Length: 115
Image 1 (tube, rainbow, N blue to C red):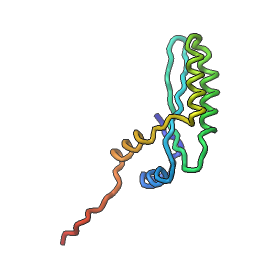
Image 2: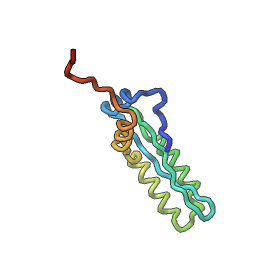
Image 3: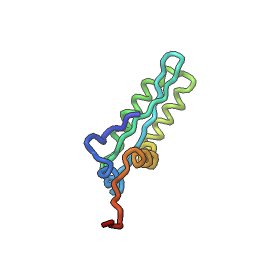
Image 4: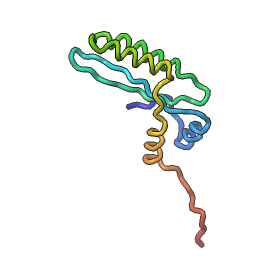
């Protein structure tokens, strides 16, 4: 999965923005290729005062247009997409923070000085 909207940010800056109210959000959508269904998600970093509507509406229409080929399950996927549109996406912040802190640990100097 690709994380969008974090270009040029360091892990420290991301943690700081999350403390101010930023979050990682995913919007699931379904792509149908004849018989096979592929579930996809995009992860977006939403800054503290940014709205999720512009990302949610894009994924709603994507789900509306691509899931219509899956006839028996299309209404379920469209309703699921509309639910995430109204909810503002699925919060994925805790998982991304765990991954970020294990892969890019923050420098913590030792409190004791040794001479």
